[in-house]
Length: 193
Image (cartoon, rainbow, N blue to C red):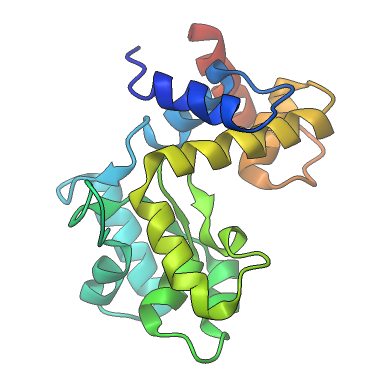
Protein backbone atom coordinates (compact mmCIF):
# COMPACT_ATOMS: atom_id res chain seq x y z
CA UNK A 1 0.00 0.00 0.00
CA UNK A 2 1.43 3.36 -1.05
CA UNK A 3 1.23 6.00 1.67
CA UNK A 4 0.91 9.19 -0.33
CA UNK A 5 0.70 11.71 2.51
CA UNK A 6 3.00 10.16 5.14
CA UNK A 7 5.02 13.34 5.77
CA UNK A 8 1.87 15.46 5.94
CA UNK A 9 0.21 12.99 8.33
CA UNK A 10 3.23 12.98 10.63
CA UNK A 11 3.33 16.80 10.53
CA UNK A 12 -0.39 16.97 11.39
CA UNK A 13 0.15 14.75 14.41
CA UNK A 14 3.20 16.73 15.53
CA UNK A 15 1.60 20.16 15.03
CA UNK A 16 -0.61 19.89 18.08
CA UNK A 17 -0.13 17.69 21.10
CA UNK A 18 -1.61 14.28 20.27
CA UNK A 19 -1.65 11.50 22.80
CA UNK A 20 -3.16 8.44 21.15
CA UNK A 21 -3.37 8.77 17.37
CA UNK A 22 -0.65 7.34 15.16
CA UNK A 23 0.07 7.95 11.52
CA UNK A 24 -1.24 4.43 10.89
CA UNK A 25 -4.62 5.40 12.38
CA UNK A 26 -4.89 8.41 10.09
CA UNK A 27 -3.79 6.43 7.04
CA UNK A 28 -6.28 3.63 7.78
CA UNK A 29 -9.17 6.09 8.04
CA UNK A 30 -8.33 8.03 4.90
CA UNK A 31 -7.84 4.78 2.99
CA UNK A 32 -11.29 3.61 4.09
CA UNK A 33 -12.96 6.98 3.48
CA UNK A 34 -11.46 7.99 0.13
CA UNK A 35 -8.65 5.57 -0.76
CA UNK A 36 -6.39 8.43 0.34
CA UNK A 37 -7.47 10.64 -2.59
CA UNK A 38 -9.00 14.07 -1.79
CA UNK A 39 -10.55 14.72 -5.21
CA UNK A 40 -12.91 12.99 -7.60
CA UNK A 41 -12.21 12.14 -11.19
CA UNK A 42 -15.37 13.26 -13.05
CA UNK A 43 -15.55 9.84 -14.73
CA UNK A 44 -15.56 7.95 -11.41
CA UNK A 45 -18.67 5.93 -10.67
CA UNK A 46 -18.71 7.08 -7.04
CA UNK A 47 -18.63 10.73 -8.15
CA UNK A 48 -21.58 10.15 -10.46
CA UNK A 49 -23.52 8.36 -7.71
CA UNK A 50 -22.78 11.06 -5.12
CA UNK A 51 -23.73 13.79 -7.59
CA UNK A 52 -27.02 12.07 -8.43
CA UNK A 53 -27.77 11.51 -4.76
CA UNK A 54 -27.10 15.19 -3.97
CA UNK A 55 -29.26 16.31 -6.92
CA UNK A 56 -32.17 14.19 -5.71
CA UNK A 57 -31.78 15.15 -2.07
CA UNK A 58 -31.48 18.90 -2.63
CA UNK A 59 -33.67 19.03 -5.75
CA UNK A 60 -30.97 21.02 -7.53
CA UNK A 61 -29.48 20.75 -11.02
CA UNK A 62 -26.16 18.90 -11.32
CA UNK A 63 -24.34 22.09 -12.36
CA UNK A 64 -25.14 23.72 -9.00
CA UNK A 65 -23.85 20.73 -7.04
CA UNK A 66 -20.71 20.46 -9.19
CA UNK A 67 -19.97 24.18 -8.90
CA UNK A 68 -20.43 23.97 -5.13
CA UNK A 69 -17.89 21.18 -4.67
CA UNK A 70 -15.32 22.46 -7.17
CA UNK A 71 -12.14 23.72 -5.49
CA UNK A 72 -11.53 27.38 -6.33
CA UNK A 73 -8.02 27.97 -4.95
CA UNK A 74 -4.61 26.37 -4.49
CA UNK A 75 -2.93 23.54 -6.36
CA UNK A 76 -6.20 21.58 -6.63
CA UNK A 77 -8.08 24.52 -8.21
CA UNK A 78 -10.69 23.35 -10.71
CA UNK A 79 -10.80 19.82 -9.27
CA UNK A 80 -13.86 18.30 -7.62
CA UNK A 81 -13.45 17.81 -3.88
CA UNK A 82 -14.52 14.39 -2.65
CA UNK A 83 -17.96 14.92 -1.14
CA UNK A 84 -20.99 13.09 0.14
CA UNK A 85 -24.22 14.96 0.93
CA UNK A 86 -25.99 13.82 4.10
CA UNK A 87 -29.81 14.09 4.34
CA UNK A 88 -30.04 15.31 7.95
CA UNK A 89 -27.41 17.95 7.32
CA UNK A 90 -29.16 19.10 4.14
CA UNK A 91 -32.34 19.78 6.10
CA UNK A 92 -30.34 21.90 8.55
CA UNK A 93 -28.24 23.66 5.86
CA UNK A 94 -31.23 24.48 3.69
CA UNK A 95 -32.91 26.16 6.66
CA UNK A 96 -30.02 28.61 7.14
CA UNK A 97 -31.05 32.09 6.04
CA UNK A 98 -28.82 34.53 4.21
CA UNK A 99 -26.58 31.90 2.62
CA UNK A 100 -26.18 31.28 -1.09
CA UNK A 101 -27.16 27.88 -2.43
CA UNK A 102 -23.55 26.76 -2.95
CA UNK A 103 -22.67 27.31 0.70
CA UNK A 104 -25.84 25.52 1.80
CA UNK A 105 -24.81 22.55 -0.39
CA UNK A 106 -21.33 22.50 1.18
CA UNK A 107 -22.74 22.64 4.71
CA UNK A 108 -24.62 19.42 3.99
CA UNK A 109 -21.55 17.53 2.77
CA UNK A 110 -18.66 15.60 4.18
CA UNK A 111 -15.55 16.74 2.35
CA UNK A 112 -11.98 15.87 1.50
CA UNK A 113 -9.62 13.01 2.16
CA UNK A 114 -11.12 12.24 5.59
CA UNK A 115 -14.75 13.13 4.75
CA UNK A 116 -15.10 15.77 7.48
CA UNK A 117 -18.61 17.19 7.79
CA UNK A 118 -18.43 20.83 6.70
CA UNK A 119 -21.01 21.69 9.36
CA UNK A 120 -18.46 20.92 12.07
CA UNK A 121 -15.75 23.06 10.46
CA UNK A 122 -17.68 26.23 11.27
CA UNK A 123 -18.36 25.74 14.96
CA UNK A 124 -17.66 29.07 16.69
CA UNK A 125 -16.93 30.75 13.33
CA UNK A 126 -18.90 33.91 12.46
CA UNK A 127 -21.47 33.18 9.76
CA UNK A 128 -19.91 35.62 7.29
CA UNK A 129 -16.70 33.52 7.34
CA UNK A 130 -18.28 30.11 6.82
CA UNK A 131 -17.68 30.02 3.05
CA UNK A 132 -14.01 30.99 3.34
CA UNK A 133 -13.34 28.42 6.07
CA UNK A 134 -14.96 25.59 4.12
CA UNK A 135 -13.38 26.56 0.79
CA UNK A 136 -9.92 26.75 2.39
CA UNK A 137 -10.45 23.31 3.94
CA UNK A 138 -11.47 21.81 0.59
CA UNK A 139 -8.28 23.12 -1.06
CA UNK A 140 -5.80 22.17 1.66
CA UNK A 141 -5.01 18.48 2.20
CA UNK A 142 -2.65 19.14 5.16
CA UNK A 143 -5.52 20.93 6.94
CA UNK A 144 -7.80 18.00 6.18
CA UNK A 145 -5.24 15.62 7.69
CA UNK A 146 -4.92 17.86 10.75
CA UNK A 147 -8.66 17.44 11.36
CA UNK A 148 -8.52 13.67 10.85
CA UNK A 149 -5.64 13.39 13.33
CA UNK A 150 -7.38 15.59 15.90
CA UNK A 151 -10.73 13.86 15.57
CA UNK A 152 -9.14 10.42 15.87
CA UNK A 153 -7.05 11.45 18.87
CA UNK A 154 -10.18 12.65 20.66
CA UNK A 155 -12.11 9.51 19.71
CA UNK A 156 -9.31 7.24 20.88
CA UNK A 157 -9.32 9.09 24.21
CA UNK A 158 -13.12 8.76 24.55
CA UNK A 159 -12.90 5.09 23.55
CA UNK A 160 -10.12 4.44 26.07
CA UNK A 161 -7.79 3.30 23.29
CA UNK A 162 -10.30 0.91 21.72
CA UNK A 163 -9.42 1.40 18.05
CA UNK A 164 -12.43 -0.53 16.72
CA UNK A 165 -14.81 1.71 18.68
CA UNK A 166 -12.88 4.90 17.82
CA UNK A 167 -13.00 4.07 14.11
CA UNK A 168 -16.70 3.30 14.37
CA UNK A 169 -17.29 6.65 16.06
CA UNK A 170 -15.29 8.46 13.36
CA UNK A 171 -17.96 7.36 10.91
CA UNK A 172 -21.10 7.07 13.05
CA UNK A 173 -20.57 9.81 15.63
CA UNK A 174 -19.10 10.00 19.11
CA UNK A 175 -22.22 8.49 20.69
CA UNK A 176 -21.90 5.12 18.95
CA UNK A 177 -21.83 2.32 21.53
CA UNK A 178 -21.15 -0.79 19.46
CA UNK A 179 -18.52 -1.54 16.86
CA UNK A 180 -19.72 -1.35 13.26
CA UNK A 181 -18.59 -3.04 10.06
CA UNK A 182 -16.91 0.27 9.16
CA UNK A 183 -14.87 0.15 12.39
CA UNK A 184 -13.78 -3.40 11.68
CA UNK A 185 -12.90 -2.53 8.06
CA UNK A 186 -10.71 0.40 9.15
CA UNK A 187 -9.05 -1.80 11.77
CA UNK A 188 -8.24 -4.36 9.08
CA UNK A 189 -6.57 -1.63 7.01
CA UNK A 190 -4.71 -0.46 10.13
CA UNK A 191 -3.34 -3.98 10.65
CA UNK A 192 -2.18 -4.17 7.03
CA UNK A 193 -0.12 -0.99 7.27
